[in-house]
Image (cartoon, rainbow, N blue to C red; front, side, top):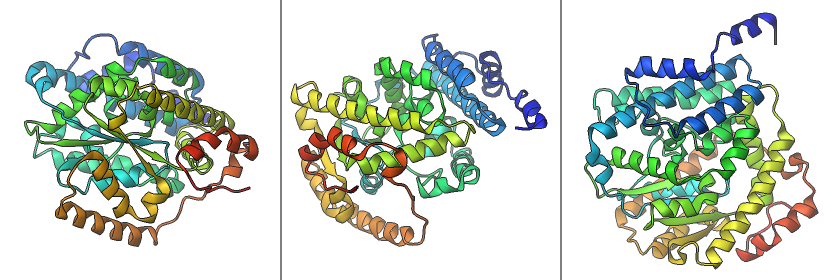
Length: 398
């Protein structure tokens, strides 16, 4: 990095005082709702500044996202304080789609979101909540969110082949936990290993309580909303999730882990390359491979010992979902004991046709297990029980 670039980076402040001051000044609010959130916020900032080694663009992106997140927290805290009745709104039996990343969670979310009786939070709603119930500001917020989402394709053009983004797209609900700073979003998009270690030990129930209040705010007075959620990272947090949403249903997608690992690690490395020139790809590989195996073991134990409610956890194989999406969805609705209406079915079939037509003209995400550097036999053995448990076809063969 040249001298001028370095001098410019010094002007991008990522210290606590500057970030808080900017958010307070912009929002014209100053109550962040207690001090508990400050601990994870400070852990993340320390990790970001000590370990992130961000380039100038990375610092600008980090500051912009941090200030926006703090503004969202200020706004939501103020709204909940002014209208305590929001917290009494019923969030009944939400449906969570989870599983490893790149195992069909986005496809299943978008299919289910075609049902007019189900509703997933949209990117712009989670990024600009102050505009959700404002008819004049809503369209502008949507434009801003779409600009934010598609900007990643400018920073790293290959990203658009990895993940479809847009302001009006249903998105991962971890965006609603961002203002708690106990959120996998921060770990996944910034090179912050010590924060990741802290997060792995953190109690997630409070962040899910914030998540629920966010949903209560989004739904307004319409308590007929059947919320549809998605977050691969919630797979490791199902105990905390059910503690806050005891009547929820969880759909877990399953795919050959060796195929998944190559994709996830490539995606995470790309997200970090957007912020730093110093990406430790092998650390990402080791973290993802070890973490995935551990999560599979934990979830299997929770399901077998009754920690998770057996009747509320359902499974979908990726191979079934991509081979016949409509048939897979029919099975999901049967498991959920929910009616698949003719209108929803028609909308889903239309979505599948449009998706097939669009994907044929788009660049595909090129990745492979070999690029991870992991030993094939050792990794295959590590996940052999999981493969057998769900009768998953091999997608990576040496």
